[in-house]
Length: 70
Image (tube, rainbow, N blue to C red; front, side, top):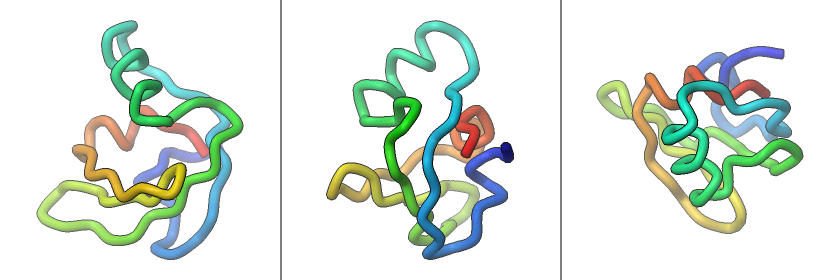
């Protein structure tokens, strides 16, 4: 297991665990970041990570991406 920030660009990964405070986990789950979901990193721009999840592109901060284990 590794944080989402360590995943290579374009690599498909499966989410194993989402950490952080309850509010953070709840927010990420509304975006589709739940265990078992497939995610791929598209690019990283000025600290933000842009990912493809559930047929959508989502930008999250590096801090949030650190809490998502793949």
